[in-house]
Image (tube, rainbow, N blue to C red):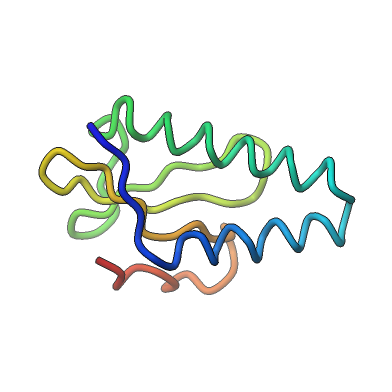
Length: 97
């Protein structure tokens, strides 16, 4: 499987990184970035092991941070649609393709 990204995923990540830079400094922001990258790879390695939420959306939680990503399997691609907080704006990103 190959990773692909919705065009707004980079913006999602940049906003979260800025939040962690302001909250805890550059090291915390780097830790978040490393964890989100590792989670992308984890989703790509075994995408069908994550349960379906609605329609064809699947969710992967980041282990340490209160964020998760939603993705779809599209042909031979794992398409990352959104990186979002667990408890904020639950509909955010669900209509992305």
